[in-house]
Image 1 (cartoon, helix red, strand yellow):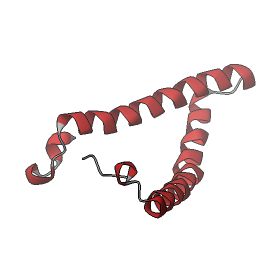
Image 2: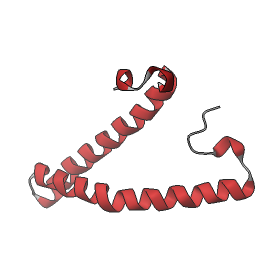
Image 3: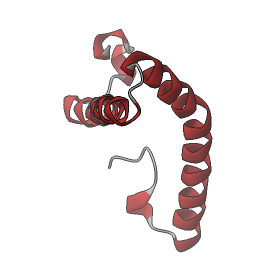
Length: 89
């Protein structure tokens, strides 16, 4: 995916790795949560994955958006330049 970015906008390897590792950790968490929940509920893990994915893609994204807006407002208000989102220095 990194090589699909335009060369003049391509992120350095370290930043690319940090961004993609967050996604991998999130996917691993959802996988193990589904396996654990399927043992508790005796449901099919695939159906639980679909439910978790839909909840994550709707409510999860809404909560993340609200959280990022709130933290960004606090960072701007307190003028904490090192904590701005997307600013890697």
